Length: 159
Image (cartoon, rainbow, N blue to C red; front, side, top):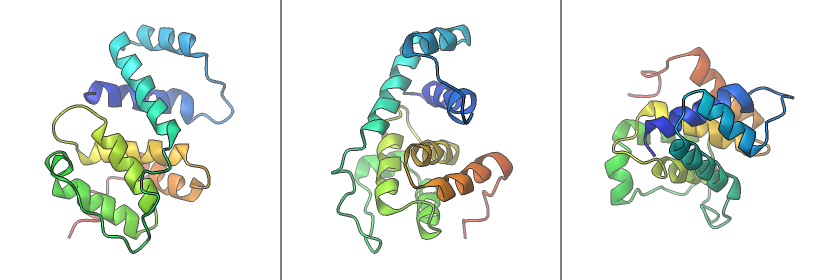
């Protein structure tokens, strides 16, 4: 999934998910609306699969992690998540926005995006989507929502 799919996920979030009380059209209707908005059917299917995998919430994913756990990235993660992305994830975890389980879900969903390098903007949006899907994460979601929409803190978390 290239950034086109992430753009589609952002579009879905901004037009459907972030509107409280709005009812989503059925999948076929949503697919038609997205095609009319200019998205390719191939990318729409990939985005739906990405969201489906997010909704699955596999219990094994990070289920043994504790707050004191140290995260070691494997080689494929190190290639795609540069030090600024890893630093941003650590910043979010240290500030209580992510816990070890939600961090693992974010990394899983980031790695599911096709392409080469993942940017901090990708990380921000994926964190927002993961937190939106997690019950009980309203405060963290609100904090992240403000970070994505209201500010540009690129230098605030880096030393």
